[in-house]
Structures are given as structure tokens and as C-alpha cells.
Length: 93
Image (cartoon, rainbow, N blue to C red):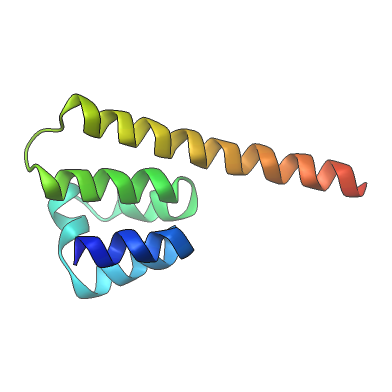
């Protein structure tokens, strides 16, 4: 299931989060409550998904490499906000 989620995440991280929530327990193992994944779905989908997949790979702690992956996902999330703002500014909206 984690490999399928990783491939699905390339298309849409939000869709991968929905599929993971419905068909697996990856999110419930990584997060104690449903609030964090819900906020992550709307605000930081890549970061939420990469953290959950990293937690599934190595339960109860993350290695330095896994934290690096989470940091890259966070930068992707921030970059998507910045890119969207730049596109809107270029169109004159």
C-alpha cells in the first residue's frame, strides 16, 4: 500500500491522503488524532503525506534521511503557494 500511495501522490497528494484514510491505517499510525491530517490536507498535503509514509517505514522515530524528506516536502508545499502567487500576479488578477 505505501508504494501505491507514493505513486498516487505524484498525481495528487490530496487524493493520496483520501485514499490512505479510507483504505489503510497509515495516517492513524502516524498521527494521534484526526485534526493534524485534516489540517495537513488543506494546508500542507505533501508534508502530511511524506511524514505519514516515513512513520510507516520506521515506526516510533524518524531517521535523519526521513526528516530530510519531510523538509523537502515542506519546501514543495511552500513553493506551490509561492508559485501560485506569482502566476496570479503575472495574469494581473
